[in-house]
Image 1 (cartoon, helix red, strand yellow):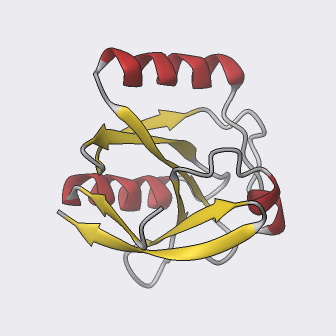
Image 2 (image 1 turned 45 degrees about the horizontal axis):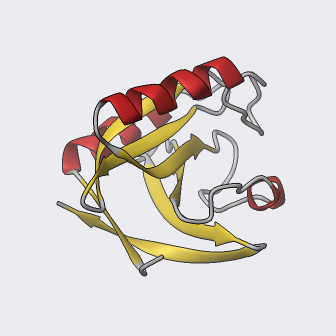
Length: 135
């Protein structure tokens, strides 16, 4: 994976708002696009309903993947929030990173500022921070 991930500004704005709306449990979903640029967000339902963990409900996950394929898009990322913690991958996030070729976005709501968003490449237990290029 390259050291940067490209994403449309409006998707970043939407992710920031999503983090601010989801302060009681982790929000989650998939990101997709074309030509290596994230152009769409697909919110998922957190089957765990937890403030410290997420799992996209399987039927919801399959429906999202169908929508991505139907739209002619490619799966480029996964997002979730850390309502109570920093926007860095937890050990659980690293253990459950089953898609090594996509970017993992972690959102953190901040009461004193706009929500913070960071992106990472996670694979084989290794984590690398990705630069976020707004396009």
